[in-house]
Length: 249
Image (tube, rainbow, N blue to C red):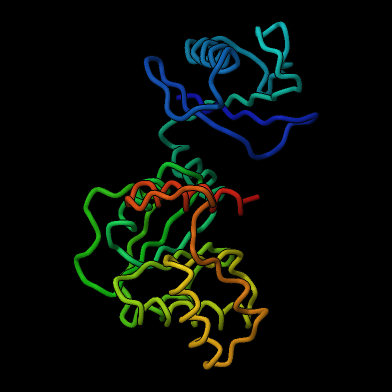
C-alpha cells in the first residue's frame, strides 16, 4: 500500500488530504480530478518498483488540464503491515473531537454522518443497549449515568452536541459544559438541539443556577446551519455536521 498525502500552498506542510493506493483499489481521496488521477498512476508505478521523490510539486495549471491556480505538494509513502499502527495513530491525531449526548434517531443519523468526516466521536447515553452494532473505529460509545458526569472527561477541544431523550438530562449536560467552560474554557462549541422556546426556558433555569449572560452566549440553540428547515433526522444531521465543520481549523 502507498500512502498519498496532498497539501496546498507555497511550501509542503505536515497535514493535508490523504488517500491509500493499492494495486487494484484506493481508499479516501485527495480531491479528485486530474491531480488525483496522476497521483494514483504515480503511486501504482512506485508499488511496481519505480523510484521517485518523496514529495512532488504539482502546479494547478495547464499541465494538469486545470485552471484552479496555486500549487499542491503530494507526498508518497510506502506503507507495510508493520507501519499500519503508526499510520492509524497519525491520522487519528488529525480528527477533531466531538462529544454527542443522545442515542435517539437524530443521534444515530448524526453519528453516521460524522463518521465520514474528520471527527473522532465520543457517543454518550445514560441508557444501556442504545448504540447500534458495527460502528467504525472513529466512534467510541460510552454509557454514563448520570449522563452529565461524562463531561468531566471529554477531550480538550471537544465540540459538544446535546440531544438526549430527556430535557432534564439536556439541561444537566448543558450546565456541566458551562461549568467546565468556566473552569477550563476548552469546549469551543456547545450545541443544544431544540427550538427557541426550549432555549428560552433553559436560559431561565441556567440563570437560576448562577450562569451569566456571557456564559450562556456560548450555547448554540437551535443547532445547524441556518436556512435548512427539514425536520427529518438525516436533514438535521447534515445541517449540524456542516455547522461543526465551520468551527474546525
